[in-house]
Amino acid sequence: MSKPENSIIKSVVLSLFNDDGPTPIIYWPETMDESSRLLIAMKTISLLMGDTVYQNGTSTEDVNYFGILPFPDLKLNGLTYFFLILDPSARGNAKAATITVLIDEDDRVFFYENMKYLRVIIDSAASKVQIAKTSEENKTIMGELKDELFEFTSEIKDPFSLFRQIKILMTGLDRAGKTSFLHAVKKQYSEIIKTLPTKGVARSEEKIFEEQNSTISVWDLGGQKTYREKFLEQRKVYLYNVDLLFFFIDIQDFARINESVELFTKVVESLEELEEYPPIVICLNKCDPDIKNTDDIRSNINKIIEQVNEISEPFFIKIFETSIFDGFSLISAYSYGLSQLSPNRKLFENQLKHFAKKINSDAILLLNENGIILSNFSESGISEKVFEISAPHFQTLYKTFKEFKLLKQDFLISSGITDESKKIIFKRIFVEKYNLYLLLFMEKDLNLDKIEKNLPKLSKNLKDLIQTYI
Ligand SMILES: Nc1nc2c(ncn2[C@@H]2O[C@H](COP(=O)(O)OP(=O)(O)OP(=O)(O)O)[C@@H](O)[C@H]2O)c(=O)[nH]1
Ligand SMILES: [Mg+2]
Image (cartoon, rainbow, N blue to C red; front, side):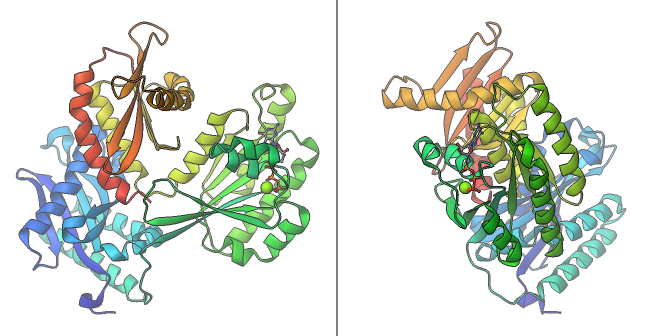
């Protein structure tokens, strides 16, 4: 085992919300100064305390998620697990708790690359803390966790690059619509018409934020027979370290459904062989609005879904019906895939949920400059769809109004959505150097002051989470 002083792991802290507020109850190293450990307890617990689930919670099952947080003052990054400890005497019958593992911010890639394993051991320590009776027991549990972390990191030799390298693959038969999809989500409409079959592989870069600590490479694989054979032959090169995989099926091409499912089977088998388990997003593509509800298409889709689910059993998959003539369907599928790359997606959702409760909003969407949905929250499922579909239009309207200097204030309000009291508000928010957009659906009374009052807190929390979003 490597000596603790050489380890990547710089600190481990168990924090609780008790009578004194956020308190670091067990921490390593024991020489850690008081202000540092207090900072860690305050920051992690306060993010959790905003959680509405916690406030109405009756079970500890409702809260258990991870996030990566920056601690710039300490030059550290923390991987935090948020959970609850049942306590009948506490508000909401539970105490908020966090376990945070800290490393140098320069080593940040370590967390992203080892999330899977780290989650397992931290989660297991947290389960023990949930039933521990005494502080001594907690001390033992945290000591064991620390030893496990050292053991794990002792095998790691390479210094980490500062940039996380993310690889996204676009796969599927030729003519399934992969290249067109990418052009359309990037709003390169004029390119769509000109699209030719992809030869070999076309690589491009994705940016979720103007400045980000990751490089996201999108590999658009040519689907013609010779190219896909080469891809399968050299699967080690293509599938190695893949972080996210899109698979496209042309649902209008009835004759090639079997061929398509066959290719999917081979891709899945190759992934298993290489022990790569990326999230998979399946696009049932060419689901054009005018034909998507015909009997033929529906029965075809049902058949495909059944087969695909069976084949991809050990994988986490999500299926979307997409069409180049329904821009939002593309954005939904693409955004969903990208969000899978972020360990902070759950934290984002919780921030939105908490903000929604404060300002009495029924649904919130958070978009980046390019209209990618970073996070969403919705109370009423019915409004969700209408609301989401309107998002791109609001963004276009906003930008157009802005360009022609037609905006007096920095937001748009649309009233009279189904009835007079329901409104949609579209607002640009600045989160440090990032331009983000919020779309709010308000069923009840609109109180702009309340929104303005609560925005700074939301921006502040998001600012932290964005730095480690990806
Ligand atoms: N009707 C319809 N046609 C589409 C859609 N998406 C793409 N297409 C058309 O399908 C054809 C093939 O699209 P591509 O984007 O080149 O397909 P690809 O999957 O990249 O093909 P390869 O590069 O050969 O693997 C083009 O003529 C597109 O215009 C869609 O959603 N609906
Ligand atoms: Mg192509």
